[in-house]
Image 1 (cartoon, rainbow, N blue to C red):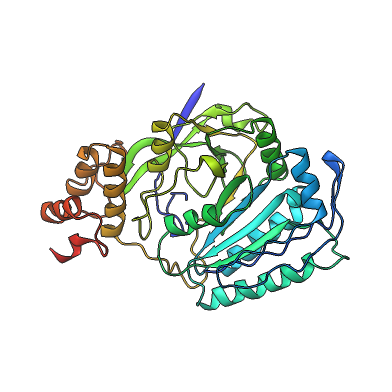
Image 2: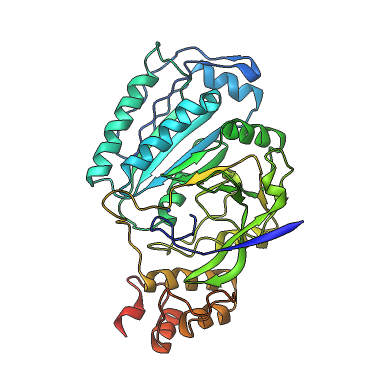
Amino acid sequence: MRHNHDGAAADNDHGRWHNHNDGASQYNNLSCWHDNYGISAINNHDGAADNYNGRAATNNHDGYALIAKTKMKTLTIGIATHNDFDGLYFSINALRQYHSEAMPRCEIVVVDNAPDSSCGQRAQGLFAHIRAGMSDPNSILPQPFSVQYVPFGDVQGTAAPRQKIFDVAQGDAVMVMDSHVLCWPGSIQKLLDHYDTNPETPDLLSGPMLYDNLCGCLTHFQDVWRDGMWGIWGSDDRGQKIDGEPFEIPAQGLGLFTCLKEHWLGFNADFREFGGEEWYIHTKFRQAGAKCLCLPFLRWQHRFGDPVGGRKSPLTLHGKVRNYMLGHKELGLPLDRLRAHYLDGTNEDTGLPESRDGRLTPVQFKALEEFSEIYPPASIYV
């Protein structure tokens, strides 16, 4: 049995229900063991390249070689952040402390879309502490096999930093999450097990997003336009059972998603600011013959409240519509629903008949349609 929740669609990181949010330094060390597979990994830190100038460290070590020989999958956990040090701090340390059994097969990558901010400077200091722990033979808990901090402020938005994670990832699979997400206990190890069991899967994978009260979860996005968003939250009974089988979904918020790196299809390179990624990327995978699946064990919790000081990442109505326009044109989708929503203000569900996200004039919409590759959006000039 299925049932839907018409929870309000809203923007990531600014209080309404919608999920989402150059250099590299890598410090390689497998200073621990992985009990589930009997793999012993000794401290063998060969002097990782430690810089923020675009080069990833390339040192090898015995522990990583042991994992490679077993053909078990490795996982890059990538976090895109923008002026959210507090969220980033707790998300990273929750992974390292409460998913420590999985860390020897994991890489942690942070792509910082505001590296010159005070939050960016603090994030770099955090990574210096993580580096010190990774090279310390007295580390209390297992460590990731690699960490990378990637300053990336040139292209502002949510899609570009997420794409950058895939570009620099060294794991076989990549899991992208917002910098204010917590993962359910055991979920990272179960995700590794899933990839070991399905080593060639081309599918885009998501998990249920937990309510703050921990009394239920939202498993997917329904195909509905409401208040400036393509997609509203829905819940499928099959996702309420943590040990349930994976099942196909139409879309899901991108606060956490994952796939094999070799099967990642990429975001539109012209996306800027916030919006337009959900449903776009899911449709892109389906058009390529893959599925979008919900893994019931891959539960996650998302902070929707703004960080202290307010949300500072760019978000404008014109920028969001431009992203939707680019995505629709790339995928060959008709513009009729997009036009009805942003010109007429039509919500597609009966609860809120008129969009509260703002409208464009016909001239502005036409400018975006004809000149969607231009940024800033052409519609702001007419």
